[in-house]
Image (cartoon, rainbow, N blue to C red; front, side):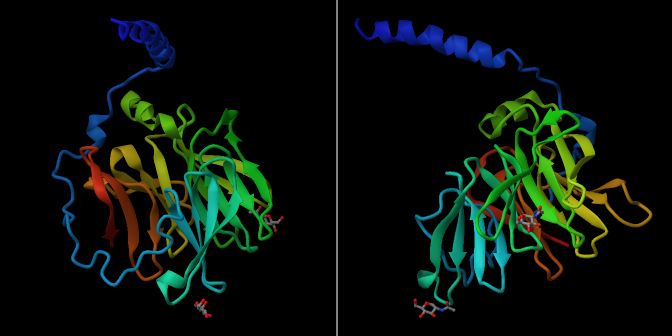
Length: 291
Ligand SMILES: *[C@@H]1O[C@H](CO)[C@@H](O)[C@H](O)[C@H]1NC(C)=O
Ligand SMILES: *[C@@H]1O[C@H](CO)[C@@H](O)[C@H](O)[C@H]1NC(C)=O
């Protein structure tokens, strides 16, 4: 009966850890009225164009690459990896000749990337906050708190022509590896914010959001779209015009939970749906294009 001893030792430890973790766990019902009862939008399970003519780059060299920022002049793609590295992929006509190199390690988890106007890469880092990686690889923190609340899961970022950065902190309560606690607790700990490098000011534009994630400035520069992962929708926040400061629904009832969103410059937004709406993991990342 020797096997019982480790169980007796380990069990109280597990219980203690669970109790400690649940100590601040404060579940709430989701606002059902905000979720449309309709069938989720139809997206074919298999898109016949999916991966058509595509080639794989950097197989085995990139750990959980998330988001990409492209420098068309240098032919370089930046992507953030799960081991903290921002990797640089020099694109060649031949996928096999494309070179992957580790560029800068943030010491955190780079989730959102966008190229700045001075050759830098701006990173929404889940652990560190919003950071600036200059052309020569120097890492500088831009902001990691607003209204006295520290960010805990900085997630998506985009830049406007005037240099203002729009970004999300998915939760000020739970970190990235506590994602499921955030999900199960069902309270809106996320914020959508702006950072102006000329004044160094961080502004909270919207609060009480359910896991705000990817961010993209609209092509007409009148609004910023961001995904609200847990609510399976994307919202549109106006930064110009008569609706300035207002927020609308951009798309709702997605057939999965949205992660990043990017405009492709040719009339389409691409939204990555890593999980189906029942929170089952898709075998492959699924992309959906809207409008
Ligand atoms: C692609 O890779 C080949 C072989 O390394 C190299 O000779 C060529 O210059 C590369 N082309 C570009 C556009 O980088
Ligand atoms: C990032 O750092 C570089 C180098 O110091 C600077 O030129 C650039 O303006 C910075 N970008 C932002 C958004 O602060």
